[in-house]
Image 1 (cartoon, rainbow, N blue to C red):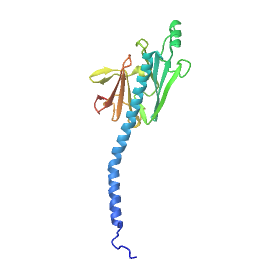
Image 2: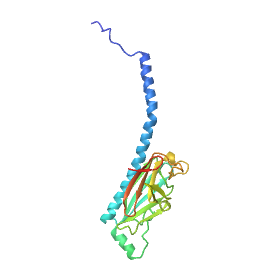
Image 3: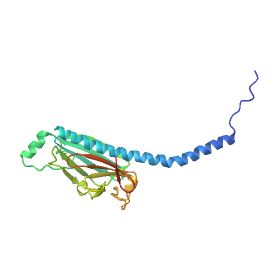
Image 4: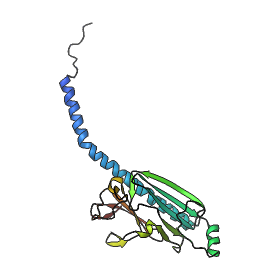
Length: 216
């Protein structure tokens, strides 16, 4: 049987042209992809923190754990661990009746009854470079911040001042100081997100635009 002589393949020149085009498109698109991926990672860390804050406040309002804590543990410029803990009704009542101070303790054991959630997020940093915690209670009576979260500098959000927040940024933005800058003058860059709370557990989320915080 005679082979069809009209069947043709690609020439070396055509293959080189295609490879060159693919390389150019990849080179142009790669930086945008990496920027998108970085933003996604930072946003996911912010969402985790906001979700954990909402969860522990729900537990507090329902009475499951009337006193709860969110603890932030920065690990240099490599990752950040966020932990939530709870104190049950019996323990809280015993301590109140004995006159003990209800503190937002950073201790890992012997104070809190339950270790609720522990999440470590790689390649993200926060605006603090050492442990900090925030604690909530049913009626806001025992609201308290401790450690580095107790020394939050004021930031402007939607034209008002707040010091009840957590900023999450890329590790590259935190390099050197080990913590995210808190404003444009200090070098805060995109992508960066902020979680704000009140003593009664209301949670708000914001994204850094390059010059200010926009609500999410």
